[in-house]
Length: 124
Image (tube, rainbow, N blue to C red; front, side, top):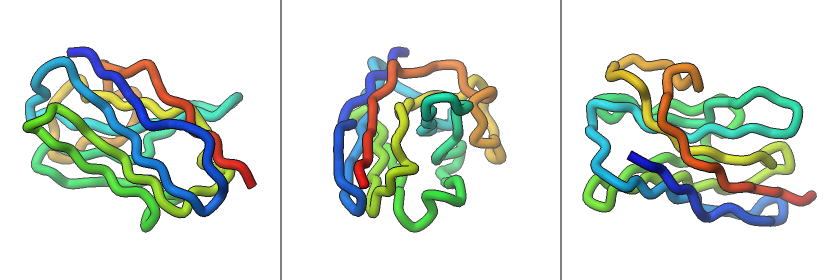
């Protein structure tokens, strides 16, 4: 399976973007999928994940502002980002987990299939 992100861009603080991640094939609901981001000079950070069973997790800094979703019929996942802040600036990646778990941590080490990334820049 290959993953391709789209939807990044330049937006003013307070604005919104919707990221999409299209998979070249079917991703089983047994696998978690997630969005990660990496800012210059920082480690890759788990932003939000959908676990096996549909449970969602968010990093504290985006709770109430970002929403993750997936459309299995389209083999696509999304990240709706509202009330964007300059600190959200990063390259955003989508990924699929390497194993199945109802309690999978949204940590990059648990994911082995990655997209190429899409850049999000939030100006103040």
